[in-house]
Image 1: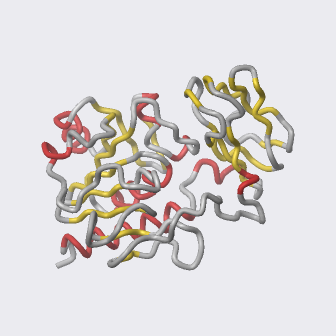
Image 2: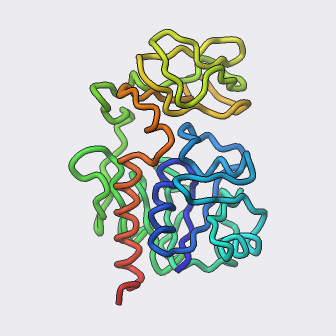
Length: 263
């Protein structure tokens, strides 16, 4: 079974790893200069590095659909720079998963495949997709929604160890993002972790740098540029999150149910 995943950030990667381990061939897409923060657990890094690996699953950036098919035949996840999903007709996937996490639909339609799943807010099951998977932390995280939509975006990050919005790092100015610390580093509130056009990006709380934009990524004021995990466990920075695993499980459930893969 071939699943085409739109987006290759950390949530999309958690979904892709779950699908891959269940026996699916997976092709993903992203933009030419990804803005993923949790880069150590995101297949979008293949765009920058050529190849990357997350929890033993390897991904390679490829130029077109033919190369994606060859890549998947090798047992790798294929990553295309293809934000418009131009390769989709040639690949002819059994399922399409929109995991861009844009909080709105950027062009996914219910007729793209036998199973079309929207991840998070911005989709309506039965209208622009067959099912929606909830991404908001809480009781319904990972739930498959067969009618209606996910909970609306609040704009407030989920609470981790008592911290919400204050654990997110944001760009102070427009310009190129230049990290001076690395993902996995322990930081204290006030430590400078990056600069943008000469302006410092200070750590907002004590903890471990769980995510940080790649060097040279252009940012605008207020754009998410990183996040800090107040739990302080560096190993968490290098493994798929509980949220991504839960959402991945919901997507796998929806794909299997919609394709009749289990008979």
